[in-house]
Amino acid sequence: MRYPQGGGLTAERQQFREELRLKAAERFAQGEASSAIAEDLRVSVRSVQRWRQLWDEGGPRALRSQGPASLPRLSEKQFAQLEAELAKGPAAHGWEDQRWTLSRVKTVIGRRFHLTYTIQGVRKLLVRNGWSCQVPARRAVERDDESVAGWVKEVWPCAEDSRR
Image (cartoon, rainbow, N blue to C red; front, side, top):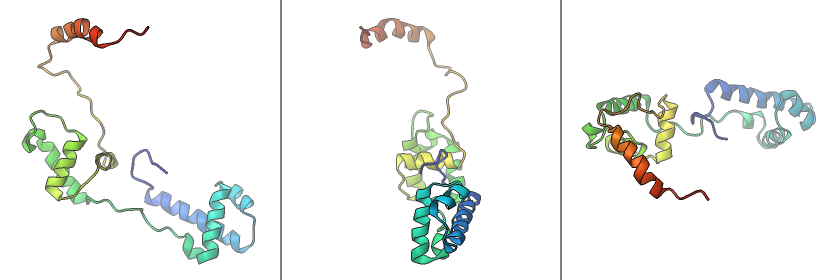
C-alpha cells in the first residue's frame, strides 16, 4: 500500500490496526465466522482470513505489530545536517546555478554521509521531513520578456506540429 506522504503508518495508526487484529483473534477463539468479524470490524473478509491463518499458525502473538518496515537511513541529526548543507545553496557544493534537484541532493547525501539513495528515495526522504517542490515566488531579474515573446512567436510555431 502506498501512502501519499511516503512515510507509512504513524505509531498511533499502527497500534490501532494491531488492536483490530487482536479483537479478531478473540473472536477466532469463540469460533465466529470470518464474514461476521469482517463486517463488525469494518475490514475486508480477505484480511480476516489472512489474520485467521496467522492466528492458526502462531496464536495471538502472530498478529502483533512487527514495527515499521524499515528504519530511516538518515537519522534526525543527520537530516538536520543535510538541511544545513542545503541551506548553503548549490553553489557552495560546486554547481553554477541556484537550483536544487533530486539528483543534486542525492549527490550531497552521498558525499556527506556516504549513503546511496535512489532519486525516488531522496524525494520520499524530503517529503517525509516536510519539504516540497518549490516554484519561484517571483521571476528572475535576468529574464528578458522581449526575447521570450520573440521565441514564442518565431521558434515555437516551427517546433510545434500542426494539430490537423
